[in-house]
Image (cartoon, rainbow, N blue to C red):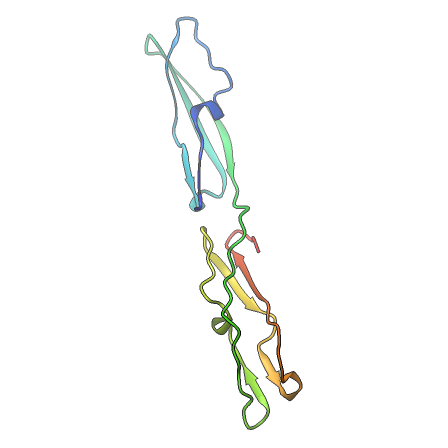
Length: 133
C-alpha cells in the first residue's frame, strides 16, 4: 500500500518526570512513499505542570517491496516482407503496478527475424522508483 506508521512507544525510550507525565506526542506518525529516506521526528513530553521537553530522532523509511509485473497473454506476431518484426514493452506489459511508482519497464527481446520463428519467451523487467525489481 505504500504506507507505514509508528507510535509514541516506538520513539519514546523511557521519558520520566518527578511529578508525572501528562502527554507524550510525536510530530509525525504516518509515512508514505513520499517519505522514503531519513525523517527527523520530534518527541514532545509535557508534564502535569505544563513543563515541556522535546527530543528528536531519525526514522528511516524504506521501500523494500518489489513491483508486481503483469504480462500479457501469449500472442503471435507476423514477420514482414523483409523477414522482420518487433514488439514494444506496451505489447508485453499488461498493467504492472507498484505502490510507490514504476521507474522503468523493459523487455529482453524486441526484434525478431526468420531465425526466431516459433515460440519465444520474453522477460518483462519492472523496476520501481526505489530500485526494487
